Image (cartoon, rainbow, N blue to C red; front, side, top):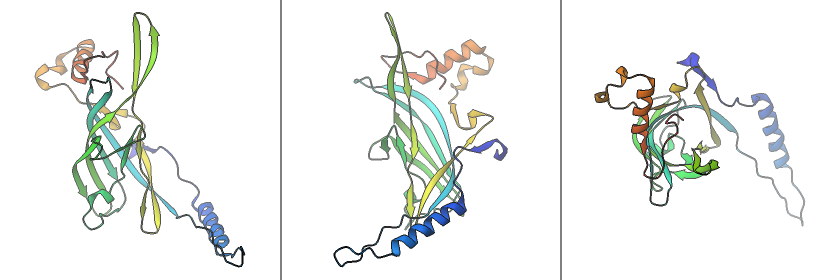
Length: 220
């Protein structure tokens, strides 16, 4: 699995970062005379980048009476860093989520922690996901109208004591099914015995729980 991973965004040069922080710190200690009073500049917190892996298991898409679309599935977040929970609070040992710029937590109903496991130097958190999708018209020529539904997932930076912790996403580069996959239709449908066209239809039936939309393709 390790050979299949790559860093989505490489970190900055550590030596350059430390020199920059030193220069800022020195500048902040210099007094600026303003009306006979000394003024100090605020020093930004140093940052640590933490490797994170996310896996999506997509189950189906639903709509509501306002034609809003929601993606139902499971999200697993692996954090390879010892972000131990503070006072037994598990929410401090993983990165909080945002879906299409909206906070995704228990209060919003967009994500709910189902299981959490903490080890000495890593953690694994499983979320139940009900993610709001952003719907745009991709093709509109009567009598046809095609929409695209997209989901932007972000991890929130967090502060740990005297430093800022920034997630660094690791993704599989050879097999995208290690990043996101569709939940297989039920075994009673005998999916392994079907041809490609029949399997696609089974996936459409599994993914499509919408009343006002039909899939062109069930694959993201």
